[in-house]
Figure 1 (tube, rainbow, N blue to C red):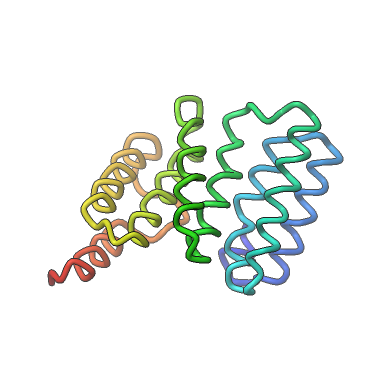
Figure 2: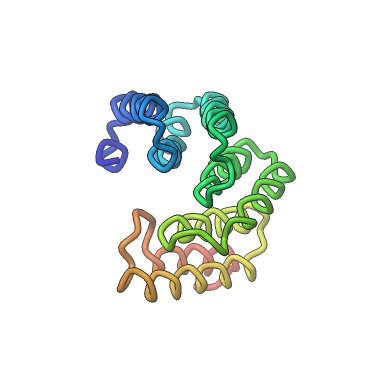
Length: 172
C-alpha cells in the first residue's frame, strides 16, 4: 500500500500481485480482496486495465472454488470492476457493478463501505450527475466523520472534491 501511495507503481504492482497469490496459498480471502482493492491505481497509471479485470476474475474464481463468495468484502471485486469500466468508458457495465457492489452494504465494514461510496461518487461524476455526486460526497463525509473521527482516507480531501464539483457546475 505504501508503494502505491508514494507512486512506486511498478514495485507496488509486483507486491500486490504477490500478495494476492500469497493470500491464495494461505486461503486468506480478506487479504486477497484487500490486495485486489489496491490494484486499480498501478494498473490505471500503467495503462493495463484489462489485466486488472483478469485479476478480478482470478480472485472471484478462487473465492467460488473455496466457497467464500458470499462474504461482504466481495464488494471489492465489484468496486474494482466499476472503477475500471468507468475508466474505459463502459458506463452501463460500471452501473451493473455498482448495483452488485451495493448488495453487500448491509454487512460491509466501515472502511470498505467508504471506498464503495467513493466509487459511487466517481461514477456520478463521470455521468455528469453533479447533484447526485454532491449528495454522495456529503454521505461519504458523514460516514468518515462517524467511523474514522475525521477524514483519514487515502482519498482527496472533501474541500478539493467540493471545489471540483463547484467548478463542474460553473460556480466559483
